[in-house]
Image 1: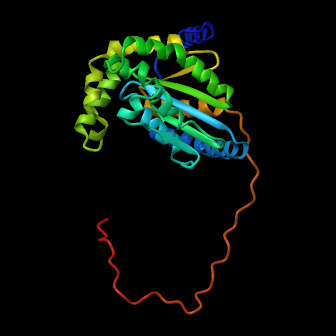
Image 2: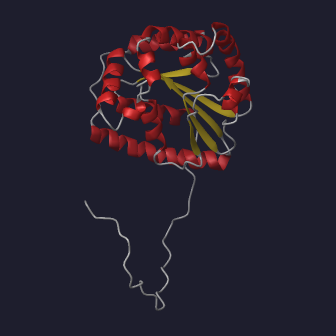
Image 3: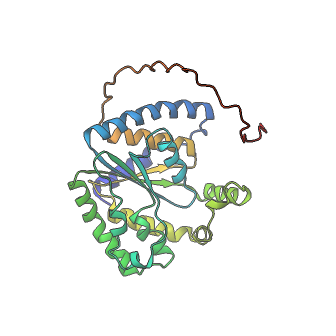
Length: 277
């Protein structure tokens, strides 16, 4: 870990007090609505200025990455805010340079690309589950800062977020997935294997931070036991990291609707859906 990052983390530890009470739903919705307005302003600024923004979300299973990304993107254009969640690599992709399949998703001018897990899979799940060798992991950790330096030198704004969940809260969330039919799809056999290896993941995370938490591309850690609070804090931090301005826009008024000029609805039965509710 860099000296700068180490000092920042030590300062965070000294100022950390008792965990605040869980955020109430009404307060969360109110604050999120305000942040959504700011995200739309940022979106228009990114589009107008041709900015290239890349946001990486990492963390253990159940840390809240998906919910944070959903909260961040639900009121902006998917043509500008693109979410990338890659499946397991194909045999062809396995033969490529490791980061190659991620690079093709990097942002062009006027885009914000959000990686729901990223090239850091090699430092986390691949390392812990034995999908790559230790030599491959060490090479990745050595090369990644240089790749990220090149990204930034090319004009990409790179932001990396790690969502930190406690073992107790992770257990609660994964058990909820088992019990809730709406969440079963979120629980894979890999999640169960990963769950049993908490400290292997802790060691992998620590090594990843030590090698890739740089002054030019630092990791931003967000405690996520309170998912609502974490989402708000991450979005607010994101907005603070990209200078933007509210662009002036013309006042919008709806035009007059055309006259019917003799049009009548057809007199024929329509296959309407049952109105159950």
